[in-house]
Length: 236
Ligand SMILES: *Cc1c(COP(=O)(O)O)cnc(C)c1O
Image: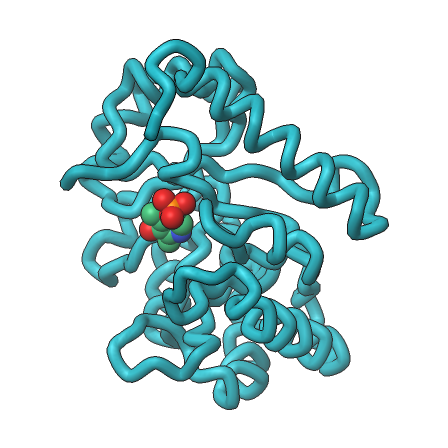
């Protein structure tokens, strides 16, 4: 049950930020090495603004159209926008340069389109590669076994900068059951770093959501994507 008095976006933001700090410290990792991406799909601008006043500084959107209506309502010096949803190639032109980081590059063709559009705009786009870490048949993302080869090809794209990996483990109610998948993503990042590709450095691991972000932090997450723990359950 939600408490009607205490449970506001503001108190939830503060609580999630405190838990991130505690989990970071408990894992023996440097303060500030984990950043919160607030997943704001379906959340209205006033609620997002309340979150920003409470300390959110990175907002993650899933749909291009929805994001483009929200972005102008916020001050660019105050917040960064990340794209975390599935990205269609025909929408790439609208996202390049608008989002500081695209978490969800899941094919070579998408990376090539980002490279082309970023080149047109005189921009270098930071991206993460989304990995289907549980090899789920219906989920987006690169197959883990394919990632090392694909990265070596993508590394040659001049207007794309590969910053790390992102994954959404198979859904279960139990955060502990996500741990092996987080560990596997970290292992894959290490494998890629060991390839020593020019301009590829696995600086970011985007993993962990409302149910399991503390476990993800223990396993090396640098970006956690948290929605319902901040804004409440989504009804749409
Ligand atoms: C919605 C969403 C989240 C946040 O999920 P919660 O369980 O609400 O925290 C994280 N990542 C992606 C890609 C999402 O679409």
